[in-house]
Amino acid sequence: MERTKAVLNTVKVYGTMESSEAYIIRDFLKRSVAAFDWIPVPDINALQHLITAPIPEYANLPVVELPGGKLLFDPSIESIAFSLGWISKPKHTEYDVSIFGGGPAGLSAAVYAASEGLRTVLVEREAIGGQAGTSSLIENYLGFPNGLSGAELAERARQQAVKFGVEILLMRRGVNAKFIANKLHVDLVDGSKIIARANISATGVEYSRLDLPDENRYLDKGVYYGAGSSEVLLCTDEHVFIVGGGNSAGQAALNFCRYAKKVTLVVRGSDLASTLSFYLLNRIQNNKNIEVLFNSNITALSGTGTLNEINITDHLNHTITNYSTRFVFVCIGGKPNTTWAKDTAIVRDEAGYLVTGTDLYEPSFKSKWSNSFTPAFLETSVPGCFAAGDVRHNSIKRVASAVGEGAMAVTFVHRYLTKNY
Image 1: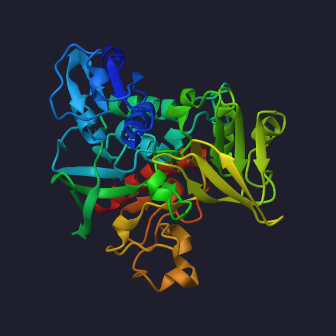
Image 2 (image 1 turned 180 degrees about the vertical axis):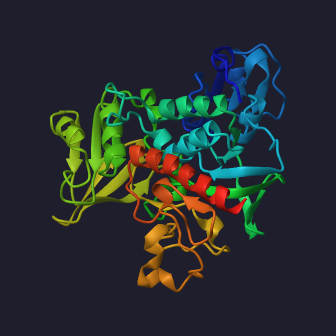
């Protein structure tokens, strides 16, 4: 899991501008704080003029050039991560605590757990940082007056966790989770297994979809989920649309407006004051390159191959307006990543969030679990299984809150282990 500047600075990505596969690679490397060069090429034949190694007859774009000149043709992000040495097998058969989710809550829990002597494993299905890792700038996090990107914050936390001995398993998805003899047993998609005496779920949320008929057709070909930090320079002189009215959408608008000809925020509500931090609201209102469309939704997407046009419906004035654009970034509310819990005894609310602590005694949840123990503040309906961050019912959706809950969860894990082992 060590990443040297020498390795990262030699990664090159070649592909066509409209390639969704190339975008996925750029986004993954950007979120992983891996410095890379993006080199657009019209086709695979044009690549031969840029590299010295021979190109196989049936090779396809995109192509990733690794340190030493090795080429990966049309690679998955898993194969890229493996080739860069970021993927490893579990070192132990059993852990004191397993943490699922590599966002702020999971990273915080990992740092505190390992620093206090617990054998700790952190499992992340994609890139470290979670949804927060896509944020172009976080300015209201304590101790960073100039702000820092979500990816940079996550990378610093990753380094800190590794320093204390946390095992980090990237690109891992759980396919089965069971509680056997008061321990969590998880089968991972690569065939490896994890057993832990206690568990912290910090799996966070994923962005909701626009739910438009042609959405999948334009996914990563003009319609992107997240703040799109890897695409900022590619949007020079473009008209960029951002869907959402929260802090991530606001920061994305301010980030894109440095290069884009115009940035339009598409907001479902009638104001930004109720969803956006005051410091961001002021900047957006005073920025001539940013316009805000209230009471509005994108209602249609069109284009040949890639996105070219969108329709926006103003629900207050009952009008539909057509806009030309190649870039739509969606930063709206999400749904929790908790499908793994559906076959367990962990209680979830109607939206899928994990219910913890005294919330479990609410009438709608009390009948769904055994009531055989008194859960701690962040403990779920299964003893020894805790939740932290955005995945938790009634959580505060802020980075600082997630970090605090991750640290707090470790305290409850200690108490649980001391009492039961």
